[in-house]
Length: 190
Image (cartoon, rainbow, N blue to C red):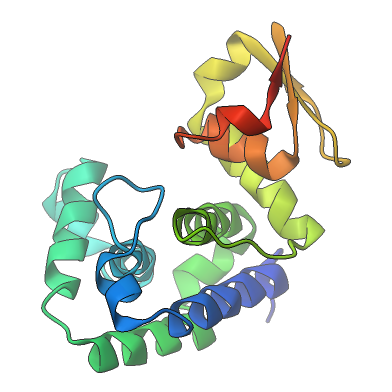
C-alpha cells in the first residue's frame, strides 16, 4: 500500500543517498552544511533517527535539540562504511511510521538535503513536489514570520502570509522561513 506523497518521499531519500555517496571522506565528516555545527553525516544521522530512534524524543522529554544531539552523538560512533549501510537502508526501506507521514516528512528530508547541498556549494534540479514541500516545511517552522511577511514565490508556488512582501523561489523562501542563514540575498523584500 502506498501512502500520499510516498513516491516523492522515496525519491528524495534516494537523492540524499546519491548526494552523500558523492562526498569525499573529508566532506562527509567535516563539510559545511546550513545546520550550524553539523557535518553532512550529522544531518543524515538526524534524518535516520526519525525512522530508527523515535525513542530519542521520549528519552529527551520532547526537547528536540536534545534528541537530535543524541542521535548525532550515537551515529558518530559508526565508521563511514557502517554509516552508509544504514543510510542505504534508510533510503531504500523507509519504516512504516514515516511512510504514513510521507507527505509531511518530505519537507524535512528536502530541507535537510538542501542544507547539505547548499553548505557544500552544490545545487540540483528540483522536482515540483520537493519545491512545494520545502515551502510547506518552511511555513510550518516559520509560522510566526508569516504573520509579518507575505511570501510570494516567483516559480509557481503558493503565496502565504500577510504583511511585507518577500519574493523568491519557493525553495529559497522555504529555507528562509525554516530559519536558514544566508538565504536573504536570494530574496526581494518590499
